[in-house]
Amino acid sequence: MIVDSDPTYPTMTPSQTHDINDRPVVAQQPVTDQPPPSYEQAVDAGKGPYSANTLQDAKDPYGKIPPDFPQLQDASAGEPSGSSSPPIPTMPPRMVYNYVNPNTGEHIVSYLAPEHPEMVCLQAGEHVTVTHYGWLGILAAVFWFPWGIGCCLMDRKVRCKRCGRLLDAGICG
Image (cartoon, rainbow, N blue to C red; front, side, top):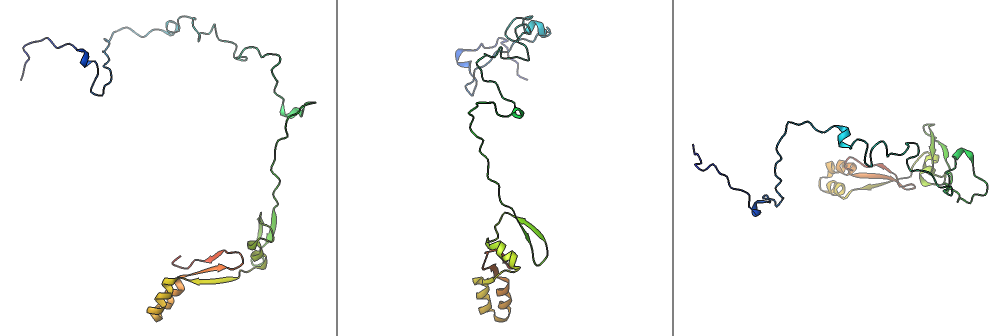
């Protein structure tokens, strides 16, 4: 065990007033056995800007309203006579179309007009299909002839020519 023979400790020099991170070192205050001050003592017993004596009435916290200040109108009261307030812009109503699927008899409600390509296909009950085969499927069909045809059929996409909807993405898609 090492014991210091000199019990005096060095005092802080001006270079020791900041710690490693260059923050000022705060001196520790001694702990006392006194309780904290009461609420009345803390707010100075009714004096100061936040005391109950200086606060205004809660119903009118901003004081009196000047007489020339415009008053708010009640929405149920309607327009006051002689007001020149601008009209409130509104959106035009959207047209809603009702369709019946001829294949299933299902009732469909849509925003799409009857001349829209998807609605033309729905009303006709069928799509005009176009099949596109992927280049990997075609190469597989050429090089691995009997089994490559199966690979070519898996690598295909079927789209509607009229509305552009993807009907079958194939196993690879």
